[in-house]
Length: 158
Image (tube, rainbow, N blue to C red):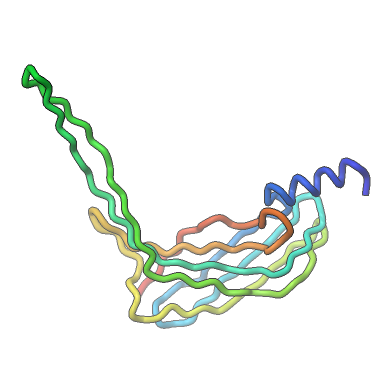
């Protein structure tokens, strides 16, 4: 490995750019098992990882308009409008999908795990001011910043 290869490997470790990670969910339904599929593609270097993992969370999010009125001495008023947001985590799990391994540059890693969400949870819903959403995050636990999929929204039905 040359000097510039070492510099590139160090940059990838720091930024999480050693691999692209993708996550896909098959028909998520409350109270029934469903599959979560993870794919990782190294980006120009070998990737050693301690584990492959997922995080899955449910969140209730509320967004409402708020108006502030300001009156000055002359009786003129000014209005300021803003959106007030608040969220609450309703469900949160983390699972290890695979143990330590290595992906060679040019290879693609693929893993799957079966997950079941409890039937008493709320499904995905969208109201006027409130929504309930599910998000999934997949990553490779590596030295430095983990390569990951970012939070990906998942539709969960009854």
